Image (cartoon, rainbow, N blue to C red):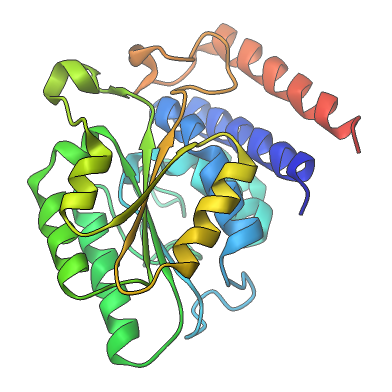
Length: 279
């Protein structure tokens, strides 16, 4: 799939996240928008998955460790064919398929329920070890938030991954620099994050998380790395694609009102139309 096609899908994923949180009247649009390019590339250009057979044994696994940022992941899953797009409008509604955090029992395409920060990467480590023990060649991908990396459990999992030589594990950190209480640097600075992962036994690559060429190159390097797990530190913009949300910490966990929703939809639809004109 070309970069322009990927950009269209990512813009649509952002639109889906805005739609979902608007109809829910709650949710987490900021981090959903920052990670949309990563989700898009993984599901449309990287992972071995089949929406017609979501539980197939040899599929690659994905764990959204920062589970609150599922709205754009849900949009990607809908575009991939796991369920209908209209399900996004039922986000967070009682009895609906799509809840505020991923639910592996209720949502096709979700490999692990998540939301308690730090636990998703731990589950991903278990999946990667299971593949090794079973002599299976599937790969495991997990996306963390940079604020999530303040959790001690993240580093317990990192030690586990390195100790067990989980070279089938790719940890992607969505480094948008903001968390619910402010900047990551202000709350509990985590830099130098690359040196930390290296000290815990990871191979590390730093990229622009909105650049598909850099995402592709990092994932290729991950596949070529043997004997150790791989971490991709992806610099992103929280609220990417919606002008009034970009780099604004207040959009961590609130939905658009009617006026904001109209503006956000117009902006994203304009981006989609401009990109489609390039094809």
